[in-house]
Length: 457
Image (cartoon, rainbow, N blue to C red; front, side):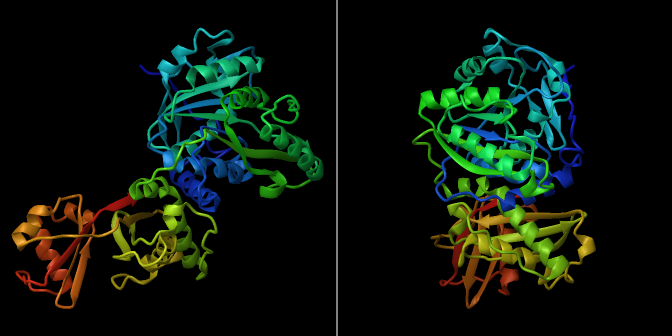
Protein backbone atom coordinates (compact mmCIF):
# COMPACT_ATOMS: atom_id res chain seq x y z
CA UNK A 1 0.00 0.00 0.00
CA UNK A 2 1.45 3.35 -1.04
CA UNK A 3 1.87 6.21 1.41
CA UNK A 4 0.38 9.52 0.26
CA UNK A 5 0.82 12.90 1.88
CA UNK A 6 -2.64 14.53 1.98
CA UNK A 7 -3.16 18.29 1.54
CA UNK A 8 -2.91 20.16 4.83
CA UNK A 9 -3.80 23.74 3.83
CA UNK A 10 -6.25 23.21 0.95
CA UNK A 11 -9.30 25.29 1.76
CA UNK A 12 -7.29 27.85 3.73
CA UNK A 13 -4.17 28.93 1.82
CA UNK A 14 -5.84 28.09 -1.50
CA UNK A 15 -9.23 26.69 -2.60
CA UNK A 16 -9.84 23.08 -1.64
CA UNK A 17 -12.23 22.31 -4.49
CA UNK A 18 -10.63 21.50 -7.84
CA UNK A 19 -12.95 23.57 -10.04
CA UNK A 20 -12.62 26.67 -7.88
CA UNK A 21 -8.87 26.21 -7.61
CA UNK A 22 -8.54 25.88 -11.38
CA UNK A 23 -10.65 28.99 -11.92
CA UNK A 24 -8.66 31.06 -9.41
CA UNK A 25 -5.34 29.94 -10.82
CA UNK A 26 -6.58 30.72 -14.32
CA UNK A 27 -7.39 34.26 -13.26
CA UNK A 28 -3.98 34.68 -11.63
CA UNK A 29 -2.11 33.42 -14.69
CA UNK A 30 -4.23 35.54 -17.02
CA UNK A 31 -2.93 38.61 -15.21
CA UNK A 32 0.71 37.46 -15.22
CA UNK A 33 3.07 39.55 -17.34
CA UNK A 34 5.82 37.72 -19.26
CA UNK A 35 8.54 39.76 -20.90
CA UNK A 36 8.77 38.96 -24.63
CA UNK A 37 11.75 36.70 -25.30
CA UNK A 38 12.10 35.61 -21.67
CA UNK A 39 14.13 32.42 -21.27
CA UNK A 40 12.83 29.34 -19.49
CA UNK A 41 14.25 29.36 -15.94
CA UNK A 42 16.37 26.61 -14.47
CA UNK A 43 15.42 27.76 -10.98
CA UNK A 44 12.93 30.12 -9.36
CA UNK A 45 12.41 31.71 -5.97
CA UNK A 46 8.72 32.14 -5.15
CA UNK A 47 6.62 33.07 -2.08
CA UNK A 48 4.34 30.71 -0.17
CA UNK A 49 1.56 32.69 1.51
CA UNK A 50 -2.13 32.29 0.75
CA UNK A 51 -2.91 32.77 -2.92
CA UNK A 52 -4.85 36.01 -2.42
CA UNK A 53 -1.73 37.51 -0.84
CA UNK A 54 1.29 36.08 -2.68
CA UNK A 55 -0.31 34.40 -5.70
CA UNK A 56 -0.08 37.49 -7.96
CA UNK A 57 3.67 37.61 -7.30
CA UNK A 58 4.39 33.89 -7.63
CA UNK A 59 2.63 33.41 -10.98
CA UNK A 60 4.99 35.90 -12.61
CA UNK A 61 7.80 33.36 -12.20
CA UNK A 62 5.68 30.28 -12.84
CA UNK A 63 4.37 31.68 -16.13
CA UNK A 64 7.95 31.60 -17.47
CA UNK A 65 7.81 27.80 -17.27
CA UNK A 66 4.90 27.35 -19.66
CA UNK A 67 7.04 26.85 -22.80
CA UNK A 68 8.76 23.91 -21.05
CA UNK A 69 5.62 22.24 -19.70
CA UNK A 70 6.48 18.98 -21.48
CA UNK A 71 10.25 19.25 -21.02
CA UNK A 72 10.40 19.64 -17.24
CA UNK A 73 9.72 16.24 -15.66
CA UNK A 74 11.36 16.63 -12.25
CA UNK A 75 10.94 19.40 -9.67
CA UNK A 76 13.32 19.81 -6.74
CA UNK A 77 11.39 21.85 -4.15
CA UNK A 78 12.90 23.28 -0.97
CA UNK A 79 11.05 25.36 1.63
CA UNK A 80 11.51 26.40 5.25
CA UNK A 81 10.01 24.63 8.27
CA UNK A 82 7.16 26.47 10.00
CA UNK A 83 5.48 23.69 12.03
CA UNK A 84 8.28 21.56 13.44
CA UNK A 85 11.72 22.31 14.88
CA UNK A 86 14.39 19.87 13.76
CA UNK A 87 17.95 19.64 12.50
CA UNK A 88 18.80 18.92 8.87
CA UNK A 89 17.09 18.81 5.51
CA UNK A 90 14.00 16.62 5.66
CA UNK A 91 12.95 14.53 2.67
CA UNK A 92 9.64 12.67 2.53
CA UNK A 93 9.24 8.90 2.58
CA UNK A 94 5.79 9.15 0.96
CA UNK A 95 5.16 7.74 -2.50
CA UNK A 96 3.10 10.73 -3.63
CA UNK A 97 1.71 14.12 -2.59
CA UNK A 98 -1.96 14.85 -3.22
CA UNK A 99 -3.57 18.18 -4.11
CA UNK A 100 -7.12 18.99 -5.25
CA UNK A 101 -5.73 18.89 -8.81
CA UNK A 102 -4.43 15.33 -8.53
CA UNK A 103 -1.56 13.17 -7.33
CA UNK A 104 2.13 13.97 -7.80
CA UNK A 105 4.56 11.04 -7.60
CA UNK A 106 7.68 11.39 -5.49
CA UNK A 107 11.04 11.01 -7.25
CA UNK A 108 12.34 8.07 -5.25
CA UNK A 109 15.45 7.70 -7.40
CA UNK A 110 16.42 11.31 -6.74
CA UNK A 111 15.87 10.94 -3.00
CA UNK A 112 17.99 7.81 -3.01
CA UNK A 113 20.72 9.75 -4.82
CA UNK A 114 21.02 12.33 -2.02
CA UNK A 115 20.49 9.91 0.87
CA UNK A 116 24.21 9.79 1.71
CA UNK A 117 24.65 13.57 1.93
CA UNK A 118 25.21 14.52 5.59
CA UNK A 119 22.20 16.08 7.37
CA UNK A 120 19.74 14.82 4.74
CA UNK A 121 17.17 12.31 5.97
CA UNK A 122 13.55 11.24 5.96
CA UNK A 123 11.22 13.04 8.37
CA UNK A 124 7.57 12.88 7.41
CA UNK A 125 6.48 14.91 10.45
CA UNK A 126 8.23 17.92 8.91
CA UNK A 127 6.05 17.59 5.79
CA UNK A 128 2.71 16.69 7.36
CA UNK A 129 1.46 20.24 8.07
CA UNK A 130 4.05 22.31 6.18
CA UNK A 131 2.57 24.88 3.80
CA UNK A 132 5.76 26.30 2.26
CA UNK A 133 5.95 23.36 -0.15
CA UNK A 134 2.26 22.57 -0.53
CA UNK A 135 1.16 25.96 -1.87
CA UNK A 136 3.60 25.57 -4.77
CA UNK A 137 2.12 22.29 -5.98
CA UNK A 138 -1.12 23.45 -7.68
CA UNK A 139 0.86 26.14 -9.49
CA UNK A 140 3.35 23.54 -10.69
CA UNK A 141 0.46 21.30 -11.80
CA UNK A 142 -0.93 24.23 -13.79
CA UNK A 143 2.23 24.99 -15.77
CA UNK A 144 3.73 21.49 -16.14
CA UNK A 145 2.34 18.27 -17.56
CA UNK A 146 3.77 15.18 -15.82
CA UNK A 147 6.55 15.49 -13.26
CA UNK A 148 8.02 13.82 -10.21
CA UNK A 149 8.56 15.81 -7.03
CA UNK A 150 11.61 15.90 -4.76
CA UNK A 151 10.28 17.77 -1.69
CA UNK A 152 12.57 18.95 1.10
CA UNK A 153 11.89 20.98 4.24
CA UNK A 154 14.85 22.92 5.62
CA UNK A 155 15.20 22.90 9.39
CA UNK A 156 18.30 23.92 11.35
CA UNK A 157 20.88 23.23 8.66
CA UNK A 158 23.67 25.05 6.85
CA UNK A 159 23.20 26.28 3.24
CA UNK A 160 26.12 24.04 2.26
CA UNK A 161 23.82 21.04 2.59
CA UNK A 162 21.44 22.64 0.09
CA UNK A 163 24.40 23.30 -2.21
CA UNK A 164 25.37 19.62 -2.16
CA UNK A 165 21.77 18.56 -2.85
CA UNK A 166 21.37 20.96 -5.77
CA UNK A 167 24.66 19.91 -7.31
CA UNK A 168 23.65 16.25 -7.03
CA UNK A 169 20.22 16.79 -8.61
CA UNK A 170 20.99 19.62 -11.05
CA UNK A 171 20.42 17.51 -14.15
CA UNK A 172 19.51 19.08 -17.49
CA UNK A 173 16.41 20.80 -18.95
CA UNK A 174 14.22 18.11 -17.36
CA UNK A 175 14.96 19.39 -13.83
CA UNK A 176 13.54 22.54 -12.24
CA UNK A 177 14.69 23.97 -8.91
CA UNK A 178 12.06 25.77 -6.81
CA UNK A 179 13.00 27.63 -3.65
CA UNK A 180 10.06 28.70 -1.47
CA UNK A 181 10.48 31.82 0.66
CA UNK A 182 8.56 34.85 1.84
CA UNK A 183 10.44 38.05 2.68
CA UNK A 184 9.99 40.50 5.59
CA UNK A 185 7.29 39.79 8.19
CA UNK A 186 4.90 42.13 9.98
CA UNK A 187 6.62 45.46 9.39
CA UNK A 188 4.74 48.53 8.32
CA UNK A 189 4.48 49.09 4.58
CA UNK A 190 7.37 51.55 4.19
CA UNK A 191 9.75 49.57 6.40
CA UNK A 192 8.91 46.36 4.57
CA UNK A 193 9.57 47.92 1.17
CA UNK A 194 12.95 49.15 2.37
CA UNK A 195 14.01 45.80 3.82
CA UNK A 196 12.75 43.84 0.82
CA UNK A 197 14.60 46.14 -1.55
CA UNK A 198 17.82 45.22 0.23
CA UNK A 199 17.01 41.52 -0.05
CA UNK A 200 16.26 41.95 -3.72
CA UNK A 201 19.60 43.63 -4.32
CA UNK A 202 21.42 40.79 -2.53
CA UNK A 203 19.66 38.17 -4.67
CA UNK A 204 20.42 40.08 -7.86
CA UNK A 205 24.07 40.17 -6.79
CA UNK A 206 24.00 36.42 -6.01
CA UNK A 207 25.19 37.25 -2.50
CA UNK A 208 23.40 35.63 0.43
CA UNK A 209 25.59 37.22 3.12
CA UNK A 210 23.32 40.27 3.72
CA UNK A 211 20.15 38.13 3.94
CA UNK A 212 19.08 37.21 7.48
CA UNK A 213 16.13 35.08 8.57
CA UNK A 214 14.11 38.22 9.31
CA UNK A 215 14.53 39.17 5.64
CA UNK A 216 13.65 35.77 4.14
CA UNK A 217 12.16 32.86 6.09
CA UNK A 218 13.52 30.53 3.40
CA UNK A 219 17.03 31.92 3.73
CA UNK A 220 18.67 28.46 3.84
CA UNK A 221 17.27 27.44 0.46
CA UNK A 222 17.86 30.89 -1.02
CA UNK A 223 21.48 30.97 0.16
CA UNK A 224 22.16 27.51 -1.25
CA UNK A 225 20.69 28.42 -4.63
CA UNK A 226 22.61 31.70 -4.83
CA UNK A 227 25.87 29.87 -4.16
CA UNK A 228 25.22 27.36 -6.95
CA UNK A 229 23.86 30.01 -9.33
CA UNK A 230 26.98 32.15 -8.94
CA UNK A 231 29.30 29.22 -9.50
CA UNK A 232 27.37 28.01 -12.57
CA UNK A 233 27.02 31.46 -14.13
CA UNK A 234 23.24 31.68 -14.03
CA UNK A 235 21.47 34.89 -14.98
CA UNK A 236 19.12 36.24 -12.32
CA UNK A 237 16.07 38.38 -13.05
CA UNK A 238 13.71 40.02 -10.58
CA UNK A 239 10.18 39.27 -11.71
CA UNK A 240 8.21 41.00 -8.95
CA UNK A 241 8.64 42.33 -5.42
CA UNK A 242 5.54 43.38 -3.48
CA UNK A 243 3.90 42.79 -0.13
CA UNK A 244 0.50 41.96 1.28
CA UNK A 245 -0.31 45.66 1.44
CA UNK A 246 -0.15 45.71 -2.35
CA UNK A 247 -2.26 42.60 -2.89
CA UNK A 248 -4.96 41.85 -0.33
CA UNK A 249 -4.13 43.17 3.13
CA UNK A 250 -3.76 46.30 5.28
CA UNK A 251 -0.53 48.27 5.31
CA UNK A 252 0.20 48.50 9.03
CA UNK A 253 1.57 44.91 9.29
CA UNK A 254 2.62 43.39 5.98
CA UNK A 255 4.49 40.36 4.69
CA UNK A 256 6.89 40.75 1.78
CA UNK A 257 6.90 38.59 -1.32
CA UNK A 258 9.34 38.29 -4.20
CA UNK A 259 9.79 36.20 -7.33
CA UNK A 260 13.07 35.66 -9.17
CA UNK A 261 14.13 33.50 -12.10
CA UNK A 262 17.57 31.98 -12.72
CA UNK A 263 18.38 30.97 -16.28
CA UNK A 264 21.20 29.14 -17.94
CA UNK A 265 22.58 31.14 -20.87
CA UNK A 266 21.65 29.64 -24.22
CA UNK A 267 18.41 27.89 -23.20
CA UNK A 268 15.82 28.83 -25.81
CA UNK A 269 12.05 28.74 -25.87
CA UNK A 270 10.37 26.19 -28.17
CA UNK A 271 10.16 27.28 -31.78
CA UNK A 272 7.32 25.05 -33.04
CA UNK A 273 4.01 26.88 -33.17
CA UNK A 274 2.19 23.90 -31.64
CA UNK A 275 4.64 23.72 -28.71
CA UNK A 276 4.31 27.42 -28.02
CA UNK A 277 0.51 27.26 -28.08
CA UNK A 278 0.39 24.23 -25.81
CA UNK A 279 2.73 26.02 -23.42
CA UNK A 280 0.47 29.07 -23.36
CA UNK A 281 -2.68 26.97 -23.04
CA UNK A 282 -3.56 27.92 -19.43
CA UNK A 283 -3.13 31.61 -20.27
CA UNK A 284 -5.33 31.36 -23.38
CA UNK A 285 -8.07 29.50 -21.53
CA UNK A 286 -7.96 31.92 -18.63
CA UNK A 287 -8.25 34.89 -20.98
CA UNK A 288 -11.19 33.29 -22.79
CA UNK A 289 -13.01 32.48 -19.56
CA UNK A 290 -12.36 35.90 -18.03
CA UNK A 291 -13.57 37.66 -21.19
CA UNK A 292 -16.74 35.55 -21.32
CA UNK A 293 -17.55 35.90 -17.62
CA UNK A 294 -16.87 39.64 -17.57
CA UNK A 295 -19.05 40.33 -20.60
CA UNK A 296 -21.83 38.04 -19.37
CA UNK A 297 -22.00 39.78 -16.00
CA UNK A 298 -21.39 43.40 -16.98
CA UNK A 299 -21.39 43.67 -20.82
CA UNK A 300 -17.86 45.03 -20.47
CA UNK A 301 -14.87 43.94 -22.58
CA UNK A 302 -11.63 43.07 -20.81
CA UNK A 303 -8.42 44.86 -21.74
CA UNK A 304 -6.03 42.84 -23.87
CA UNK A 305 -2.82 42.04 -21.91
CA UNK A 306 0.11 44.26 -22.83
CA UNK A 307 2.62 41.43 -22.53
CA UNK A 308 1.96 37.90 -23.79
CA UNK A 309 4.18 35.18 -25.30
CA UNK A 310 5.22 35.99 -28.86
CA UNK A 311 3.21 33.06 -30.27
CA UNK A 312 0.00 34.71 -29.10
CA UNK A 313 0.82 37.78 -31.21
CA UNK A 314 0.96 35.70 -34.38
CA UNK A 315 -2.06 35.70 -36.65
CA UNK A 316 -3.98 32.50 -36.01
CA UNK A 317 -7.60 31.40 -35.86
CA UNK A 318 -9.23 29.90 -32.79
CA UNK A 319 -12.55 28.29 -31.93
CA UNK A 320 -14.06 28.63 -28.46
CA UNK A 321 -16.40 25.84 -27.37
CA UNK A 322 -18.54 26.11 -24.26
CA UNK A 323 -20.55 23.29 -22.76
CA UNK A 324 -22.85 22.98 -19.80
CA UNK A 325 -23.67 19.62 -18.22
CA UNK A 326 -21.90 17.97 -21.14
CA UNK A 327 -24.12 19.65 -23.74
CA UNK A 328 -22.98 22.22 -26.28
CA UNK A 329 -23.86 25.78 -25.24
CA UNK A 330 -22.00 27.72 -27.91
CA UNK A 331 -19.13 27.51 -30.37
CA UNK A 332 -17.75 30.28 -32.57
CA UNK A 333 -14.33 30.77 -34.09
CA UNK A 334 -12.19 32.05 -36.93
CA UNK A 335 -11.44 29.55 -39.71
CA UNK A 336 -8.30 31.46 -40.74
CA UNK A 337 -5.76 33.63 -38.98
CA UNK A 338 -6.48 37.26 -39.75
CA UNK A 339 -5.62 38.95 -36.45
CA UNK A 340 -3.39 38.27 -33.42
CA UNK A 341 -4.36 35.04 -31.67
CA UNK A 342 -4.83 36.72 -28.29
CA UNK A 343 -7.34 39.13 -29.85
CA UNK A 344 -9.13 36.31 -31.65
CA UNK A 345 -9.52 34.23 -28.49
CA UNK A 346 -10.90 37.08 -26.39
CA UNK A 347 -13.38 38.16 -29.06
CA UNK A 348 -14.58 34.67 -29.97
CA UNK A 349 -15.00 33.72 -26.31
CA UNK A 350 -17.63 36.45 -25.97
CA UNK A 351 -19.26 35.56 -29.29
CA UNK A 352 -19.47 31.87 -28.39
CA UNK A 353 -21.65 32.74 -25.44
CA UNK A 354 -23.66 35.58 -26.95
CA UNK A 355 -23.73 35.37 -30.75
CA UNK A 356 -24.09 31.68 -31.61
CA UNK A 357 -27.46 31.72 -33.46
CA UNK A 358 -28.30 28.24 -32.19
CA UNK A 359 -28.54 29.39 -28.58
CA UNK A 360 -29.89 32.33 -26.57
CA UNK A 361 -27.29 34.67 -25.02
CA UNK A 362 -25.56 33.23 -21.98
CA UNK A 363 -26.94 34.30 -18.60
CA UNK A 364 -24.82 35.04 -15.52
CA UNK A 365 -26.47 32.23 -13.55
CA UNK A 366 -25.19 29.72 -16.13
CA UNK A 367 -21.52 30.54 -15.58
CA UNK A 368 -21.00 28.17 -12.64
CA UNK A 369 -20.12 24.74 -13.95
CA UNK A 370 -19.49 25.97 -17.48
CA UNK A 371 -16.87 23.98 -19.42
CA UNK A 372 -14.78 26.06 -21.84
CA UNK A 373 -12.13 24.90 -24.29
CA UNK A 374 -9.98 26.65 -26.87
CA UNK A 375 -8.93 25.12 -30.20
CA UNK A 376 -6.12 26.98 -31.95
CA UNK A 377 -5.76 26.22 -35.65
CA UNK A 378 -2.33 25.65 -37.14
CA UNK A 379 -1.59 27.38 -40.48
CA UNK A 380 -3.62 25.86 -43.32
CA UNK A 381 -1.84 23.52 -45.75
CA UNK A 382 -3.18 23.56 -49.30
CA UNK A 383 -3.84 20.01 -50.50
CA UNK A 384 -3.02 18.70 -53.97
CA UNK A 385 -5.22 15.89 -55.34
CA UNK A 386 -6.47 14.46 -58.62
CA UNK A 387 -9.89 13.28 -57.48
CA UNK A 388 -12.17 13.09 -54.46
CA UNK A 389 -10.91 9.57 -53.80
CA UNK A 390 -7.34 10.88 -53.82
CA UNK A 391 -8.29 13.64 -51.38
CA UNK A 392 -9.99 11.17 -49.04
CA UNK A 393 -6.91 8.90 -49.07
CA UNK A 394 -4.76 11.80 -47.87
CA UNK A 395 -6.99 12.72 -44.95
CA UNK A 396 -5.84 11.58 -41.50
CA UNK A 397 -8.85 10.80 -39.30
CA UNK A 398 -8.72 12.35 -35.80
CA UNK A 399 -5.72 14.47 -36.86
CA UNK A 400 -6.70 16.71 -39.78
CA UNK A 401 -9.26 19.45 -39.80
CA UNK A 402 -10.49 20.40 -43.25
CA UNK A 403 -11.55 23.58 -45.05
CA UNK A 404 -13.22 23.22 -48.45
CA UNK A 405 -14.20 25.85 -51.04
CA UNK A 406 -15.98 25.65 -54.38
CA UNK A 407 -18.54 27.63 -56.31
CA UNK A 408 -18.42 30.54 -53.86
CA UNK A 409 -19.26 28.26 -50.91
CA UNK A 410 -17.02 27.08 -48.08
CA UNK A 411 -17.13 25.16 -44.81
CA UNK A 412 -14.73 23.95 -42.14
CA UNK A 413 -14.64 20.99 -39.76
CA UNK A 414 -12.34 20.86 -36.75
CA UNK A 415 -10.47 17.59 -36.10
CA UNK A 416 -12.88 16.97 -33.20
CA UNK A 417 -15.64 16.23 -35.73
CA UNK A 418 -13.95 12.87 -36.45
CA UNK A 419 -15.25 11.72 -33.07
CA UNK A 420 -18.81 11.91 -34.46
CA UNK A 421 -18.05 11.12 -38.12
CA UNK A 422 -15.09 8.70 -38.20
CA UNK A 423 -15.38 7.63 -41.85
CA UNK A 424 -13.58 9.92 -44.36
CA UNK A 425 -16.33 9.63 -47.01
CA UNK A 426 -19.02 10.52 -44.48
CA UNK A 427 -16.80 13.29 -43.12
CA UNK A 428 -16.58 14.83 -46.60
CA UNK A 429 -20.32 14.48 -47.29
CA UNK A 430 -21.21 16.19 -44.00
CA UNK A 431 -18.75 18.98 -44.75
CA UNK A 432 -20.24 19.52 -48.20
CA UNK A 433 -23.69 19.66 -46.62
CA UNK A 434 -22.47 22.29 -44.19
CA UNK A 435 -21.15 24.32 -47.14
CA UNK A 436 -24.49 24.07 -48.95
CA UNK A 437 -23.07 21.87 -51.69
CA UNK A 438 -24.74 18.70 -53.03
CA UNK A 439 -23.53 15.59 -51.19
CA UNK A 440 -21.94 14.12 -54.33
CA UNK A 441 -20.63 17.44 -55.65
CA UNK A 442 -17.25 17.46 -57.37
CA UNK A 443 -15.57 19.78 -59.83
CA UNK A 444 -12.16 20.70 -61.21
CA UNK A 445 -12.23 23.91 -59.13
CA UNK A 446 -12.72 22.13 -55.78
CA UNK A 447 -10.16 23.33 -53.21
CA UNK A 448 -9.19 21.91 -49.81
CA UNK A 449 -6.85 22.88 -47.01
CA UNK A 450 -6.02 20.79 -43.99
CA UNK A 451 -4.82 21.89 -40.59
CA UNK A 452 -4.50 20.64 -37.06
CA UNK A 453 -6.04 22.03 -33.91
CA UNK A 454 -4.11 22.49 -30.69
CA UNK A 455 -6.68 21.81 -27.97
CA UNK A 456 -6.17 23.70 -24.72
CA UNK A 457 -8.43 23.63 -21.65
